[in-house]
Amino acid sequence: MRYTILILVALTGCATSGQPPHPLAGTWHGAKTLTLGVTDYWIGDERGSWSADTRTFRFVMDSGTLAVVRAEERCHFSLSGRTLVLSGCRMSGRYVRGS
Image (tube, rainbow, N blue to C red; front, side, top):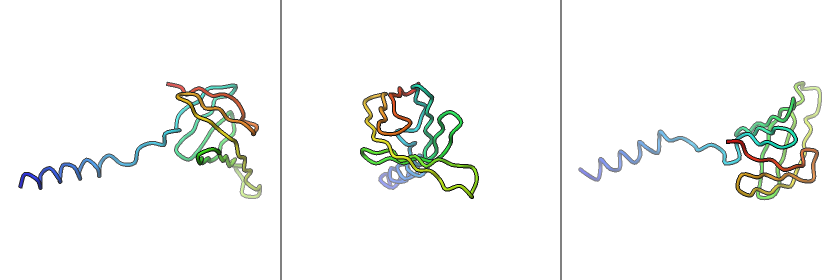
């Protein structure tokens, strides 16, 4: 009986915790402010979606109209502590994560 209660408590905790936020989600400050949501990004007036693998960021700009082809851009990146460095794209620069 006591093991059944422990298992139920553990399962309840797992069910309510949900998925953790993306580790890169947040606001990054550089020459411009880059905000990364779980799947969306904002930099200045530009908005779109993003994804990343171990070495490359992929930004897909949302044009706002279906008639325009969505522009995709890839950047190399490195992440060290609170510092994100993007290179090889127009968003290149050093960004520091806000608190």
